[in-house]
Picture: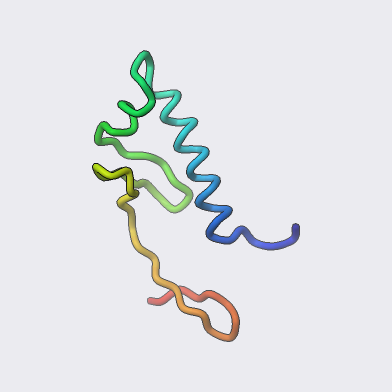
Length: 74
């Protein structure tokens, strides 16, 4: 709609792509078993892994709002 993708759009895209990649990797195993095995997954901003609770472990990028816009903290 003429806007840059925001966080929810990026997270939704990555969740769908994780599902697709997991389905491709699983072979005859259940999908849950594939996602629970330590592995590296591809994301828009690099790679990540999932911890025992299914939370992503990835690089952290801090931002601040300045003049109504998100700007990275260096």
